[in-house]
Image: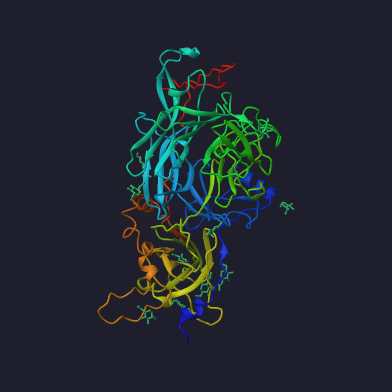
Length: 635
Ligand SMILES: *[C@@H]1O[C@H](CO)[C@@H](O)[C@H](O)[C@H]1NC(C)=O
Ligand SMILES: *[C@@H]1O[C@H](CO)[C@@H](O)[C@H](O)[C@H]1NC(C)=O
Ligand SMILES: *[C@@H]1O[C@H](CO)[C@@H](O)[C@H](O)[C@H]1NC(C)=O
Ligand SMILES: *[C@@H]1O[C@H](CO)[C@@H](O)[C@H](O)[C@H]1NC(C)=O
Ligand SMILES: *[C@@H]1O[C@H](CO)[C@@H](O)[C@H](O)[C@H]1NC(C)=O
Ligand SMILES: *[C@@H]1O[C@H](CO)[C@@H](O)[C@H](O)[C@H]1NC(C)=O
Ligand SMILES: *[C@@H]1O[C@H](CO)[C@@H](O)[C@H](O)[C@H]1NC(C)=O
Ligand SMILES: *[C@@H]1O[C@H](CO)[C@@H](O)[C@H](O)[C@H]1NC(C)=O
Ligand SMILES: *[C@@H]1O[C@H](CO)[C@@H](O)[C@H](O)[C@H]1NC(C)=O
Ligand SMILES: *[C@H]1O[C@@H](CO)[C@H](O)[C@@H](O)[C@@H]1NC(C)=O
């Protein structure tokens, strides 16, 4: 008789897809969205995470950028918030860390040549916030955690998080300062809510630059309710003040504005009949480093700027492609000649306008990734403006934004996640054995899993013996579901076993990590905390003498995830293992959901912001900005 594993391992059972894949029918999506209170979402058996269910309005894989993943940092309903990473090919969830109250501006950044997942997390307020900028490496170790310095209790604001080539992070700030508001008819001893930005060195944690709008803009002239700061190659800072509809370049030595583009103080001649400088209530302004243009004869000094032009904030809802339409905008300016011209503009394929939020990302193949803010949509365009990916995570096009349902920024980028925690397994075992059982497996954050191998035995201590390999099945989406046969279909082999475990396998056949062992006679509760599966193959024959022998399974042996996280990544990843411990979920009689996922210490998003007094004033007329200062007398 052939050994059992050889028979069954060749039996590649097609898995059923546990994930609810993206919909493509918008009326079905509308029905789903309505039935789920505007938050179309799904849950899993092997994981406590919640994932969105997307609607794909359009996808052209041949024209879409080949970046492997999509980054979305978001509030999710009233319960879960966190950075999420999706597979760019099928939009399945890859990673989520839903322990936060709010997260924004999630993206992958290179810090010193190493890729990091960075995002802002913190307390919720309307319009601004206080929190931390967190950076995790691809093994999900927290590497940097920075916030504002020297602004009393004010912390990093949520609107901006950008990383410079010199390893610094720039974020926006809001803080109260005593201010004489008599010039605008206010009290002498008012508290002004000032805005600005800080740059912090990630390696040392030292403050590099601290800018306050009130020092450079007079109170009756301007108000930067929202500051979007971004470092240029020269070290100067591009600041976007959406309430003024201006972009201004801030000198990195003096803090003074070098020029002002747009708004009432615009210093640039618009070579495009007004369409390059009429942006308003904009978000996510970026200077594109050294962007050559064929149209720049005699204008070698052109600089390209991209932004999300919200437009229509004041005019409200408006028909598509009218003068108040939101657009993804690229302009070229010549700061020497003070000219600006429109390079390209992209409107939303379904014609939506977004008064607030929104993002613009230039991708390496020339495509443009856009997020549509209050309309929870993200759209990737080819350079000629053809939409190549058009996705919704909620209802769009309405005049009223659904609270917490938005796409503040959505980015595409590469990611290779190798979590220090093990994969997770859950089982439905109607017969208290593998007989007719259904296995659910997932591994939050792992990007290199190609298939799952199911091991079963009657002795949990030896489950990792390669002869216990029952089935190998391709990975599908976030959670793979594998239905075990009642008996081998090709023989009468009895495959009924008491214990089960799973191993995550790479495309080259190496075991990347393995789950705990479940005891199906004990309601699927854990039998041991690790199955120690390191290979699908028999161990190599014993080596003879002297030389340090190579491991029988080199990749498996160097992968930290094949052993318990407390032995490997834990020291470097306190947060991961702490949350892992907190996360083992309870089991039920015939099923269990056991394993360790990224994180989920859920906190109900609280809105503590009490705007006790907003004080506005508008000044119209030549040389003055239409805008307002917000004076916060809360404290
Ligand atoms: C979308 O779904 C609705 C409702 O199920 C159905 O009537 C309609 O034919 C579908 N549209 C397409 C294009 O499949
Ligand atoms: C994506 O395409 C670029 C060329 O545009 C190529 O250099 C890169 O290797 C590709 N990446 C992947 C993951 O295929
Ligand atoms: C980041 O640092 C702050 C203190 O500055 C701390 O309260 C917070 O828990 C840290 N975040 C993480 C994920 O460790
Ligand atoms: C980047 O690398 C340099 C040289 O190894 C080091 O001095 C610096 O601290 C690193 N920066 C960060 C942010 O880790
Ligand atoms: C349980 O297993 C026995 C054989 O061991 C089989 O006869 C029976 O049908 C199974 N029941 C279920 C619900 O699968
Ligand atoms: C499975 O075990 C439970 C007790 O743990 C028992 O109540 C149930 O009848 C068993 N089911 C089968 C099919 O043997
Ligand atoms: C396996 O379970 C299914 C559904 O519970 C049942 O219809 C089928 O008879 C079972 N098979 C065996 C062999 O028990
Ligand atoms: C694995 O199981 C087989 C079959 O029971 C046995 O012959 C072999 O010795 C076991 N291997 C190890 C390393 O225990
Ligand atoms: C199959 O194996 C299980 C566990 O070893 C045993 O309890 C069961 O009786 C066997 N079934 C048959 C039909 O031999
Ligand atoms: C500038 O805004 C855009 C986006 O809304 C409009 O499409 C343009 O028509 C408008 N240009 C001018 C000159 O008003």
